[in-house]
Length: 310
Length: 310
Image (cartoon, each protein chain N blue to C red):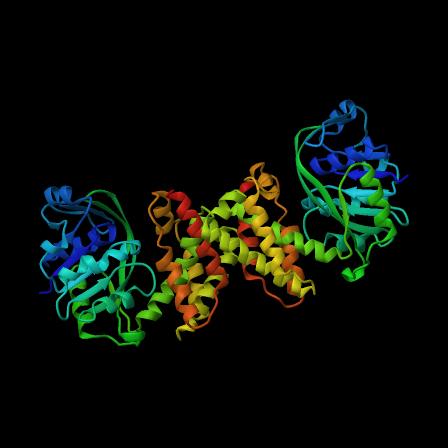
């Protein structure tokens, strides 16, 4: 039975870690501000799929005190990734699996360079969940994860046995999981949604519904998606027109939705600008491809983020 | 002695028309909402260059009732230009001069196509003035006009005798005036400032000082200026790097300034998006030149403008 370390017990880490513990897996949670409360009272998850409480969890406020686990699940906001090297070092042994449940591009490569002895995976979470208060998570909708493994230079490494073992655990924990052969393809696909909607929700102070309801902003969303496809192409990944059309029509039918970046903005938290936009620009620029609209959004967001937290 | 019709008696029309009347020229003002008040009480101009009141002005609320003047000064916001054909028709005779004191590109060509019997000029106003209340204008700073004449397809037509006659009148009225040989060059130059600062002041809700104080937005301003230069180049006009550097350093030294578009936005008036951005995009597109950043700003502004006035 694989053991799990959850690095960052917010909505994502708390929800998936909670599901794993409920299913009987040994789970160890790293916390910071919520440490005392969660150690005493455990975790409560109000979920559309059924509420549950874990009255006792293995809580830590220092990775040095955590046991070495088989799988390290990184569920921090990517704006914290500069402390990952320090946080994970005590937890890594030969063949540890590091699973990044984060938004954004190219973090798996960064982590794999720091920890060459580990296997690194990316999990793309399609979930609506918020931490309402310490130890209390509200899970509103969805919970599927797309899982893919990183290999040097983003070579596609197919479906590995390691991925299958994690999928078996997650399935046992009632988490929908889809295995993907090409991590970079999946990451770029997710940006097709994340870049336009996250950026414009903050810049225009708009819900997805407002953006889709105005002909100028709807057109703009689509043009930004086309630019993401150009970025993907610079990395030899293909985003086809059908995929873009599906994202648009899917979003049109969604309930009005505040993106994760807009929530971060409203709570004056740092925005995941580098992971979601900056790294896409960087990867394309390495191939001499300019993404002018995404670059402009990137600069607008940095201006707004700095002022928001001044 | 030339007579003047002022079409649109806001801050710009009221200030320059008032200066001309004070200098002894026959001036006729077209008004709409302020008609009754101005007819009774005249115009008051509080100016950094000296206050003055015109207790009696020739005020009209219908262009049919106005005399045919030698020079028709159009000082409406360009968002009103769809009614220009109707407004000006009764005022035009052979060789009338139409002088557009408006922001934005390519309106002289539009007006010249409607009134081929007239001479059309563009005046680029460098003025800080607001209408505080009906018949009351506050002139804060600057007042220079750059004047150029339109010729078919924007051929440069040099300094004409008509321009010199107007310059003599304006000089007599204590208005600084500079004569320019190439209208299209002057219009594109003005967009170097107007496009980035007007757009971003609304989208980012920022003063010029805030934009210049953040490294991302400052860089963005400069990149947008470079894109304006690409637009100018598509029309065979050259914006050199020295000009861009001068605009940036000049703006850095300015007092924090709310642009005219931001003021329009704050007062929930329609924004001059088409004149300032849309026509630049259109002229470049006719030459198969794409301006992706300006196009994105254009769409963002349309979204914000529609919501602002919903």
